[in-house]
Length: 108
Image 1 (cartoon, rainbow, N blue to C red):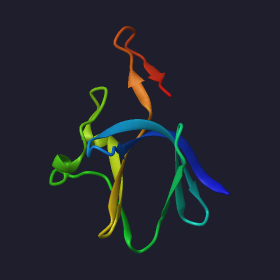
Image 2 (tube, one colour; image 1 turned 180 degrees about the vertical axis):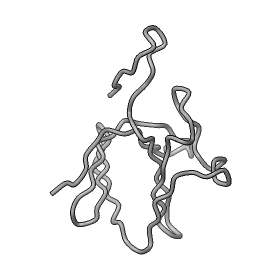
Image 3 (cartoon, one colour; image 1 turned 90 degrees about the horizontal axis):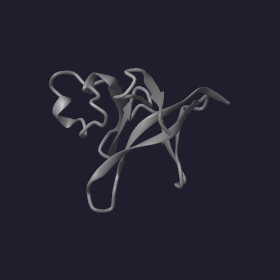
């Protein structure tokens, strides 16, 4: 059973070593798994455990945040760090400001 489910931007690495922010369905289940479903890609799971830390950037780690889309702030990000393995970055929402209307639009 999913406790939380939302569409967020997730930073995905590419084969060339670059990365980009992609809209993904993200769900947290009762068994401690974070399921990340990116369109046209298989689901990726992160098992939360004692080896993981969830961190919102502080002044000392803002330089580690990947380049952000749509004039977003590092304050809107958080990451799941698996010790000695990988870091997955998330934007706190999947909303983009419309330049024309000044209101929020959902992008998928």
